[in-house]
Amino acid sequence: FMFATCVAVSMNDVKSFQEFPTSLLRLFQLALRINSDEDLVAISQSPLLSVGVSSFLVVILVGTFSILVAQLTQSYLELYDSMVGYAALRRMQIEVDYLQTLRRKTWNRFVGSLMLDEPLEFGEGDIGLPGGIQIMEPAKLH
Image (cartoon, rainbow, N blue to C red; front, side, top):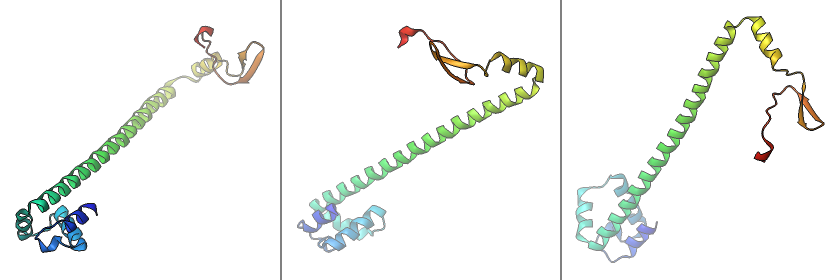
């Protein structure tokens, strides 16, 4: 709207750019490249109109290029997330396939060594819930 208003109020000799509605329509047609050669010749005759239309087309070009870059960036992020997800699924499938080759006795011995039925100790004398694996860390870290 800003460019159409500026072009309409400028003192130009091109009839199709002297009123706001027709000026807006002509700028829209120029942006979509559905104009005739006579319009371009008429625009080139007026220096102020040429500058206004040229700056409008540059703004449109930069804006559409920015939208394209944003779409490509978002597509890449979604593709990367899918790739990471499929890689995790593939690793899980390899683990499941490997677990099917283990003997039941070996698996039960491994699960028993985890001691998942014993409660965890959160602090001295603070007995927590069973079913976890406790990892001790140095007290100086916190």
